[in-house]
Length: 473
Picture 1 (cartoon, helix red, strand yellow):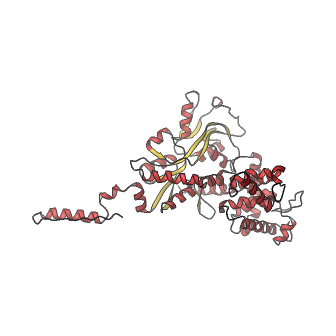
Picture 2 (cartoon, rainbow, N blue to C red; picture 1 turned 45 degrees about the horizontal axis):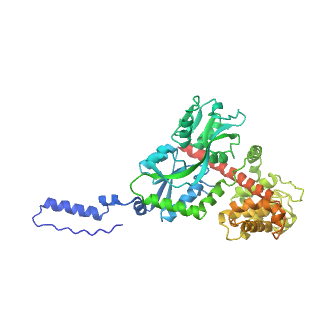
Picture 3 (cartoon, rainbow, N blue to C red; picture 1 turned 120 degrees about the vertical axis):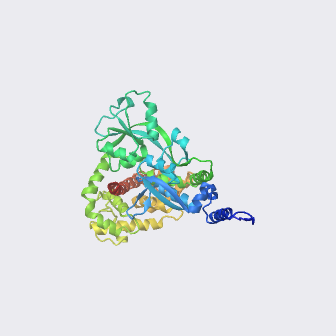
């Protein structure tokens, strides 16, 4: 609050009405309703209200609620950090289209918008954008089983796109070269809506960014990228343009710090580090198993997951055995969680082919490994190190961290460490380790596959929630 010292001298000959007017002015100032309050900077206004209102879209990457009804998503996590850095409460306001977002920002119903926004020249004239969060490629999407266009000259139907988006601006520029290109722009459809329409056959083509495509392929595996229209375009947040630089300044400073301390790199790894490769056949098989097989064992995954998400344990089990209780490998590991005899004995499992015992033993063992992962590793990433240890042994996991450090990487960063896993198969590197050779490439794929299965289960749950929300709407 501002402290205002006001002295009013009333001349004895001033009329009663003038005196009353002055007194009303004094009361107004002291009550906080005086126009002086309008002169607060944007940042001071936020601090006064103690709240940061953020417009967003429900999305598998931006913002959604997990199985415990807790908010999550790459934008949400960074926004929560930003609000906390300012001492503000974060209030997420989900809207239903990019047009709604920009209108809410114009009308000052929100202070900031964040929903995988790509600035265009026209949008930059109206709004200020934060520094780049991460980058994406603009891609043309079609459905597997239909002819794959090689260039826009092969596109024989209209192309769906979000009206006013960066992708629409790209298509408009390209339409000068491809006269037959038809653009179907809709300001009420976001990228995920467009992908669903392609999946359902309502659209033949759409242009979206590659990261949302990769995430959506986990439950719509027939979607495919034909080619890239524009590479490496930035994802940003947006605020209103004004002469006041206070909010914009702290936003720039915040992004600078979060890039410098690797917070943003860790978030990008967490949400997108597993989507580089897509196996169409495997994903279809997994989705069939989710419907036909998973319900038989879901209650046990939930019962024995402990502090972990039960869907993560289910993903590990699928990677290990494809949810086959009698699975067996050439190395002798068996059951739903493919336990060795030594591990089974350690975890009190007397029958590895017993579904309940196997799930309990595997889940307990994974949590034990997580507890052994060094505390120098961020809690969000400990699980990936533990999974690598589950696959190839805890000692080999420590070895690859040593190799990472020898090469100048960060042994506490999964992004750096996972790239060194294949080096455990090269003599020049494993001879420098304590535990020697290990199938590091297998461990790399093992963790990556589990992350993909886990993400698919999360997105399937989120999809059900979004459908319920849209039905209510």
